[in-house]
Image (cartoon, rainbow, N blue to C red; front, side, top):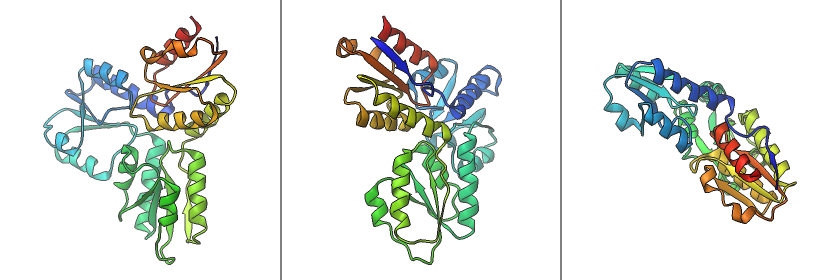
Length: 281
């Protein structure tokens, strides 16, 4: 078998920065150390950090029980109220929010204060989107599907500001914006999909169109990995979603000539290399 690995596979800048931050805090930070939500959607990394004493806080209720130590904001970011709660409880806050996500927070804070209706293209249940909503002075509208975009209605006198979840499918973002354009709203569109996401999706689409089988590596809860799997599946019917090398079924790949490999932004390089080695041996 031959293997082609996407150059863009694995940790993006924001995720690498966040993970490095947690490991640094685990070594020399003010203990106990907590992350607000899993630092990334990768069970292997989260387990390793737990072994180093880093605990995960699953929401505001668990945060409210903490009386000392450090709380690390993950790359997905959080709403304003979480920062306020951390401060009110006298905890040390380390902010590892991705700078590209921070930029969206500043945009929606400014534009909603100016009277614009914020429209977020993304998954309403994703922590990044929840965080973005937490910086809007009025309730934001979240759209994920063409049907939702077609059903969206507001008085034409209300101006819109349209932003996107950084890891959203770029093609779908364009499609939804086009649907909203036909409604003739006074709107500004800020393409906040991160460049690394666009590059990763474009490369995955290209490789999947060239290979006999495609392997997509990432955590089961990783939104950007799920989108990669969807993109690759549209190009290559033999596309497989795995989390680690242990999930790899070489039996289905035995007669495969060329295998492509890509991975989500929260997949460590070590796991990608393990999968590549297993395919070649």
